[in-house]
Image (tube, rainbow, N blue to C red; front, side):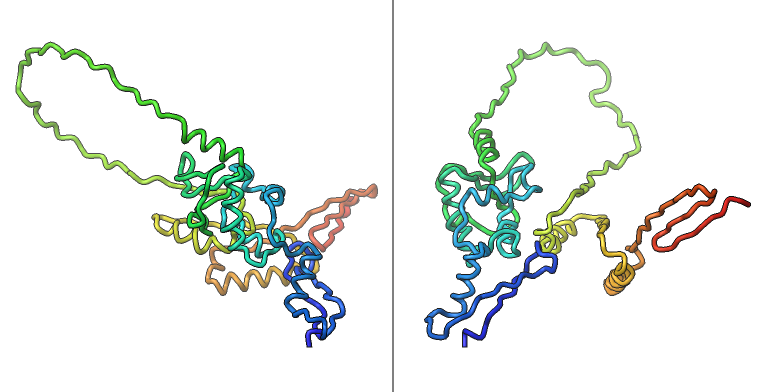
Length: 293
């Protein structure tokens, strides 16, 4: 029965069609190999499935958006193994739980939890990291070794506290006039204690699906929340009208068509000929203007 299955179709965002078709080859019913075993063997032979990628592989695949601060969220790392951005794993959670402590102990990477303004709540590097410290969420990070070394050195640096030098007591001065100053009626000016936080920048595709579950609920905890949308996409000219209508229908289904607009940018070309006429090209339409008159 297994011999009747010949092809496997995988989601592949790097392929133009979005999927990759893999030929399993001719099977033999008496070979003793299961269908799942055939699929796994074929994926491994095509470098599409990996048992245990090493530290060098992760360093080469480190995403560009996370290179600046040197911190790769563990949740984004796990998602990269699942969506085909990197070689897929049979058990990505087991890989993270067992390999990350090994990478940290060997000094290949660092591990941090609890992002703060001046660093992280806890940083591990070149030391034992217990598996119960590993979790797959957005507030734990795999660190590049240079960043981990810097954070560990900063944490080990002693804090210098300036102790003021005691001053001799001042000689008391005789005070004349009323013991307590008379009250002065002054208008009270309310002081605003609210600050506005703005989030701006590019968002990597592997964390798009997590925005609604993590970032948006956190933003709703504040007041006067304002979220805008600025997206541009290139499509073929012969399908742009249908694509635009589909986008408008989606906005109507979400009841945001009155506030979010879909705009189509047209390229305007102007050609001047030697016969004193001007040819305008607006999108797919052309216009000829005669200058003899």
